[in-house]
Amino acid sequence: MASKGSLKRVRKAVIPAAGFGTRFLPQTKAMPKEMLPIVDKPVIQYVVEELVDAGIKDIIIVTGYHKRTIEDHFDAPNRDLIENLKMGGEKKRHLWEAVERISEMANFVYVRQKGPYGNGTPLLNVRHLIGNEPFIYTWSDDFIMAQPSRFKQLIAAYEKYGCSLLGSVRAIEDEYYARYGFAGGREIEPGVLEVDTIIEKPGKKSAPSDLANVSGFLFTPEIFNYLDKALEQLGEGEELYYNDALKLMLADGKRVMAVEIKGGRYYDTGNILEYMKTIVEFALRHPDINGAFRYYLKTLRL
Image (cartoon, rainbow, N blue to C red; front, side):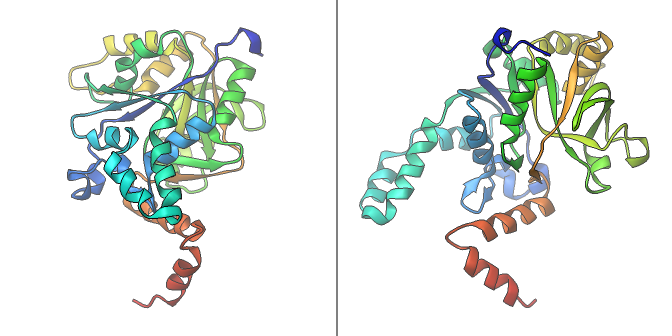
């Protein structure tokens, strides 16, 4: 067990958002996939709000040349927009307050991605901003709705074990085994594995457990040195993955845990079908439209 008093607080998060979103073309030709709406909020805002709720102060978003819309969204709002909303009086107060609140949620930093393809490269791009601190690494197009939130659960586990953590969910469908990485190891308490192996997309028969590593992770800064080693071993044209660094850490005897996020539902909006399912679920829970939308679905005839 780690001594909580000796651990540095988790204050920073990194969100990679430089991909092209090819699964959603032509929609994502001009609009980042991270900005696809879930009813009335872009998917990345759900991720950011969850980070802020968990106490994260600094959010570093790794982008590409085509992602300026993300920066604009979290920037201070256009004054003309605010004045227009205020002209609507009290009935639009909630709108201008919501818009103003977006830029005030956290300190936002934007870094342009450079280096080889792969999900390990954004980490190397932000090394100078993270320094010698633990941090959360999370995707911008999926999330888990849980109480307490997945990030609060990961931070609580970090305060207990003091090592890198892989946020995980139970594989409830066979297709999970073809889409996600899986961790194997000794279960030290219910839903917590001391990892000794990580296999990407293993197939159900070869999976070392039923814990799929998805959505968000908490890394200690030692991962950067292992990313350097993985980069040195990279062949021409190969991609750099954070899992390559984690495997090198395990080979060196470093402790890595897979932590099941309890009491939550996983939403993967990175593919069209799951995105549409997410929209339907959130619309059915939206206080302004849930009744009318539910009636529409019940009466829909195609």
